[in-house]
Image (spheres, rainbow, N blue to C red):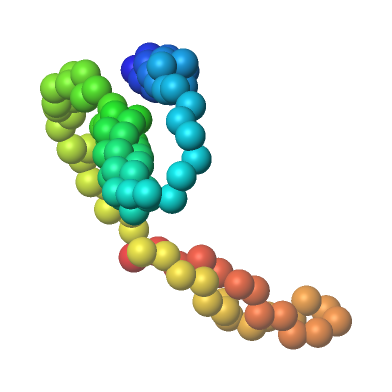
Length: 102
C-alpha cells in the first residue's frame, strides 16, 4: 500500500509540474497566492501522511490454545545441612556435615 501511495503522489507531483504554466513576475496580490500554496501544501501533506501512516491490516486470529491440566504438585521433603557428631580420626577431631531431611 505504501508503494502504491508513493507512486500516486509522485505521479501527481509530476502532473502538476507539467500543467503549471510560468507567469510573469509581479508584486500584485502576492499574499493570496502564498496563502493558497501553504493551505494546499498542508492539505496534500495531511492526505499523503495519513495514507502512509494507516494502521496495518489486522492479523489472523487463531483462537485459544489447547487446554492443559495443571501438573500435579510434588512437595519435596525439606532438607538442610548440619554438623554431625564430632569424632577423633587419629590425628584430630572431625565434625562431618550431614544432610537431614524431614
